[in-house]
Image (cartoon, rainbow, N blue to C red; front, side, top):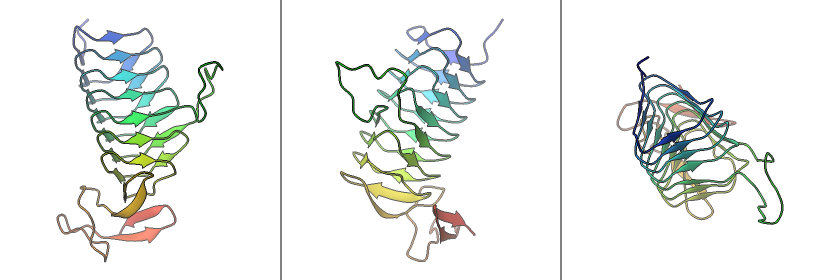
Length: 187
């Protein structure tokens, strides 16, 4: 039976893993048991997908990223090189935390910048953009642009990724937005 996805020969795929059509898994990756990867995903070199993690369709995970149990990436999420997800709020080497993971959700179309950290138990909103090196310690609103340590909102971004003007209009694709309880919504 011919596979409809690609896995480089240097990568390991455990049992009970689901990999969607058109997905590409490159060098030295490990996909652990119970993980689900959607269609048309791309995993760069040295990516680890932990037990029972759910990855949506069209997700791009760059080199040196580990997506730990308790983290979920919805469709079209981009994870920059060496970004970090945590899954335990107060880890200790001498106390077992197995199975006691804080949930982290990265919503549709969000971008996690290179070398940024997403502290567990938070949600990154739809199409939000986390700047490189930022440390996310609280929920991020839909379409928010956050930067710094700890990350603070410094603006808004369009679905296409361009920073929005003060009137919440995109100078590139002309989409317009308005504020809502969870961030922005397109109008």
